[in-house]
Image (cartoon, rainbow, N blue to C red; front, top):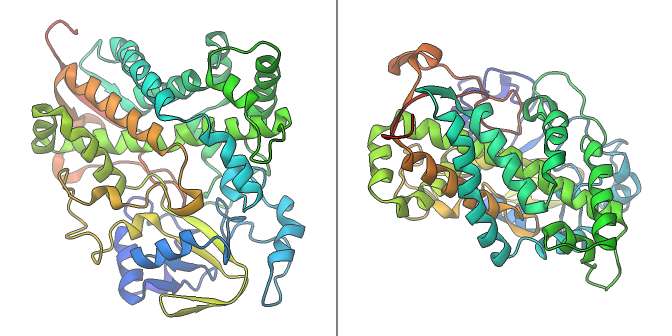
Length: 428
């Protein structure tokens, strides 16, 4: 990292496999540092990141999932660009999705979602998670090896979120065909010169809007019925399309991040026999293991904010119109917050203090669901195997492991994970 400023984090692919030395070098130079290639202010310090994430008045989320590409649609001038943001917001990609909204619109739309993901509903859904995991494992564990991302993690997360939302079973094949995890997320933060569709989740809007209309005519005991009947804080009834966008965001984001979480978790379990044995001894340890997985390898490398007015963060001047990247992956390895941050410690006392799910008003509303999915899947996999190992045939020997990572500056996760396993007696 001697040539720190020559590294193009956003357009180069040399950091995809291991961005952490770069994050450490940035933080070592300054926890709030403007990289020279695209002028993005990189926030890698824990306290500084939390400050930015909690300040929605100073920082807009309109660029949250795009950052410097394509950037803001018009030149930015002046010391208060609040009106400019509102005037041109709808020209930005994914401007109709929850992560890019600001109050008061964000407050109203998030309220719809929070009425659905209740502790009671999650508890009911978690019981179903174990059954769904077992159904998939019946096939996945039929041999002695298998590819985990497409063979289990992807199908599992799709089935869980479809069950939570009440998507009819007969529609699932169509969802699988349309929502291919790799193909549909490859341009979100791509390190290649690829453009992001203005509304990449549009294919889900029509389907969920039809579900909402159906539930309003004929209520059922599912989450979509709850969403169909939910109102904004002022008591007004959302249009079906507005509710559909909330459901589409939960459906898409709920799969993306959880697949990355599960991939990293099984990679650790398969690479570290000591940790695998530790979890097998006591399933009560799985939850903190999930938190440490999220801290050590955050599924989202970071998200973006646009400063409305001049301000300072960590003693660094931030002019109005500055694009900031809160680098979750780097923040979660800040040694000022986490002792020996490079070490994966499944018993780490403050593992849950990570910012993998963000902070403030944009804290991921699906975080409890992702945590529950991670715990349920890992528990069932450990219950039904006696040993899990990395396939040397596919990934190389222990001292020369090779993995491919999602080629984006936003997502963090392996694209395939080939495992060998020993099913417990009676499984094969």
